[in-house]
Length: 151
Length: 331
View 1 (cartoon, chains in turn orange, yellow):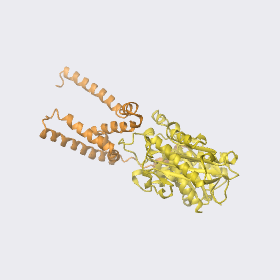
View 2 (cartoon, chains in turn brown, cyan):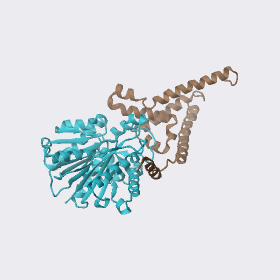
View 3 (cartoon, each protein chain N blue to C red):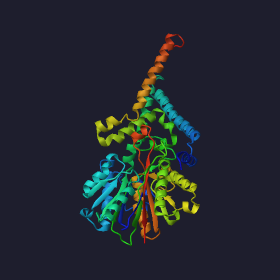
View 4 (spheres, rainbow over the protein chains, first blue to last red):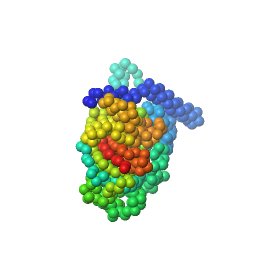
């Protein structure tokens, strides 16, 4: 049996990735995560002295804290198996990546373990996030200078 | 390459130990010990795995009424970098030791070498086997344990388990090793590390076919042909390969897979179990006991291993795989 024949057999038997189902689940659960985030936004505006521009920080901090807690309790990965991108894309996914890597490194000590492993997963998010933010800002600056849009 | 063991070395005793998650295994009742703490009350996963290996060896020595110094050879491997858990367990065992790596096929490659040493009369008692630890293996090969990555239906769950067998001179009332086949490395171009069954099935097919041909046997000469950790999907693929070469349904029923059955139908484990400890713990508990009870007279155990590393996969390499087989009979 050659490689091509084998590929046929393998493709026939291997269940296809349920993209539509995965996208739907990610949309619903991701949406739920964001709705919870929004509830915190209203909570901080109504009960504390936050405005719509300043409320982002405490909201993100709360969501990050909840995700970190659920990661430590081993619940986050179980939700993520169902949610996929729904729990990976929001800020909670970033928290999960950082915290799970930090917990994993604990047995190698705080410097060589936690410290050097913490951003192993999230490092590329930071790098490409910062880089793309820079370029988006640059494009906007050019457009504003040219008078196409306003700040 | 089929090796015939004329002196028919016997499996004198077996020891199997598993972690807390493995309570859910359908083979649970066959294991000698199941531990509550996944780190065996040690500080690290790796120390826990070493402890698990030691415990399996101690169980064997107790069963056979032997001491450390009676063991001539210890042949074993695991999946952690440089196999430190096995090496550290060997330090405590203090027998002549060769670390063996055939990934998840180590349960059988070590058994083949132990049988050869026994055949040569170089060894009176040799312990062979393998182990894997879920947390220690996952963090090395994939993501941190608590990272929320969605796994596909083809993914498998690395078991926390160790299985070891004591090999000695032929004893007609015990399962005996009559032949073995050392597999080649087969690579059919699979690149997805979450589809090990698909990567390893061709290796199992190649080794089983080579063994049957070398021994001039048919599938139906066996009561059971059990692969290691192809998983539910990999086993289906293997059966389809044999079906294409003309095997009938009753012949295909001879095939089983330790990984596919390990956690039963529990969907949380996706395509089933994997890991060096998966085949080792099933072969050296359930299979040994089934043979002793007379249910099976002739079995072919074919453990499969994916010879990849996280580095090789990230560098875009395909996944080379191997499979080693051993034929065990009960008189």
